Image (tube, rainbow, N blue to C red; front, side):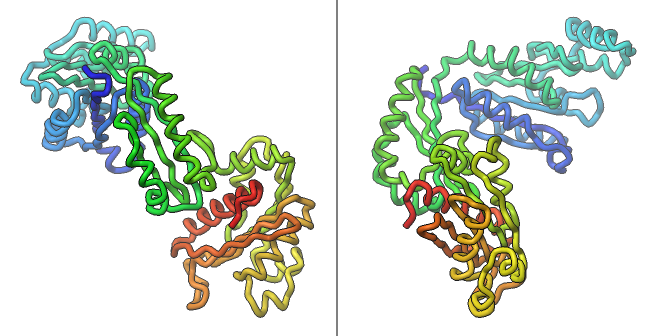
Length: 421
C-alpha cells in the first residue's frame, strides 16, 4: 500500500441512551484521537439507537465507506442489547458458546463473590465468524471480524473497558493488518479575523500546498484554527515540510496568530504579560467578570493580574472608577468616552501597567435604534495611549459576554506586542 493511501475508519456508537442525551458519547471522541495517532482517518462517527433496522442500515452504510468499523455499546445480556445478534445476522452465522469466554466470565464473578446466572452466561455466546477478544475489566467480550476485506470490532460501551480493549488488542491488530502512513498535525491559532476573510488572505498560499499536506479551517467562538495535516512515511520529513509551509504562511497572518496546537488565548496573554514584566487590571461591565475568570484560570496568574471591578450600574462607575457623571449622562455607559475613562482609571486605581475595560448591551433587552443589543465598547490603556474598539455582536446574551471576553483579551494582546491599529 502506498504510504499516502488513507486507511478509513467509521465509529458506530449504539444505544438509545446516547440519542436521548442521557449519556454523552465520549468514547467516539477518544477513539478518533487514538486512530489519528496511528495514521487511520475517521471518515464518519455515527450514533444509532437500539433498533434492528437502524443498526443493520448503519452496518451496510459503514461497510461501503470504511476499511475499519469500530462499534461500542449494545453488548449486554438483555433483550435491548442488539449488537451481537445483529452482527450474527449481518454475517449470516450462528451464535455459539465459546468455552474460553465462559471461563473468563465465571472467573470475573467468582473474584467478586457473585453467582454466575444463566443470563450472564449468555455473554460467552458469540457469533461463529468472530474472533473472541477477552475483556479483563468486564463481562462483555470484544468481537473481531474480518469479512469482505473490512475489519469490524465490537466493544462494550463502558469507557474504561473499551479503552483497555483498544490499547491491548485493537490498535496492535490494526497496525499488523495495514501499512499505515504517518500523520503529522500542526495547528495555527488565530483571533481577530473571520474565517472567510482569513481564507481570502491566504488563498494563493493555500493553492501552492503540496499534495501530501492538507489544510482545514476550524472556526470556533471568536477564533479560527488552521490545521495543517501532512501524510507520509517519515515523521521528521513531514515536520520539516510543514515548518517550511509555515514560513510562507506566517508573514501573511502574523498579527492574527496568537499560538499553536494546545495554546489558549488566556495562556498567551498571561505569558506575554509575564515575559514583559507587566500587570493588568480590569473594569468589566457587560462581561460581568468573565475576562477576569479567563485570566485567573491560568496557574500563576497572580504574577500579572492585579484585580478587577464589575461596576455594573452607572452610579458605581462614577463612585468607584471616577467616570465623569456628565459623560455618563450625555454619552451613556456604552460609549467610547466612558470606556476610555474606565480603562484609564482602573489602571491607576489598582496600580497596573495596563487597564482593560468593557461596557455594552449584552441583551436580550436594553437596546434601542442607536445602540442595539450586541453593541459593546472595549478599551485598553497603558498610561500613554488608550486604544478602543467598538463591537457589533449578536442577540444572544451569553454569546455576547464570551465574544467580548475574547475581543478584550485580544486587544490586550495586541497592545502588549504593539500591533494595534
